[in-house]
Amino acid sequence: QVQLQESGPGLVKPSETLSLTCTVSGYSISTDYFWGWIRQPPGKGLEWIASMYHSGSTYYNPSLKSRVTMSVDPSKNQFSLNLSSVTAADTAMYFCARTYCGGGSCNWFDPWGQGTLVTVSS
Amino acid sequence: DIQMTQSPSSMSASVGDTVTITCRASQGVSSWLAWYQQKPGKAPKFLIYATSTLQSGVPSRFSGSGSGTDFTLTISSLQPEDFATYYCQQGSSFPLTFGGGTKVEIK
Image 1 (cartoon, one colour):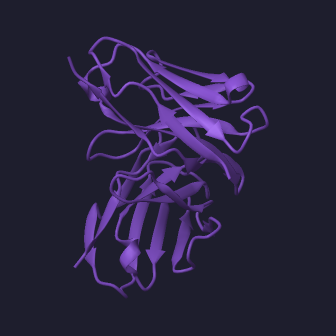
Image 2 (cartoon, rainbow over the protein chains, first blue to last red):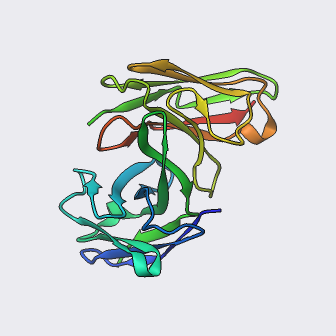
């Protein structure tokens, strides 16, 4: 059973870089699938941030592209998210997820991590 | 970007009711549309993909339909555990986008 767990600081200062890690268990990220990040500001909807294939092919949301970097560490079975120059608007629950392939697309998300709340404040 | 618009944004229903939620894409996404259920403080749960295919373990009272730009999620015989917020998501092209959500509340 694949499980994902996000980790990282819960509080980040404005203008600094938000760094999160997703640790995967029950499946080797080097085997297959895209891996992704999605966020949800408090009381609001879901926003896709980025997806990366284990080989390194990466897709970023254009609205965040200039500030986002996603990477994979197969040796630790982890993937990471860096979001630079954060502001209060980046305060959100951040979820990591594996993509699911079905019906001709590999752009669904299942399973998800439980999420980690990141607050941007001085 | 493909904009996803859900309606209604919230609704009240009773146990046993049939509920229909609509999702409209700003341009055609073929059948590449998914639905998720989210309860407070939890991660979204993957319900349906490719418009109408139920993910393993999802009760058959959930169903999806549509194509192109207009899609629906129907919950037949609403159960207490179905009260949640539902999101659609297009998987047609990057950037992947979600609808704004529909909160189904107890009447």
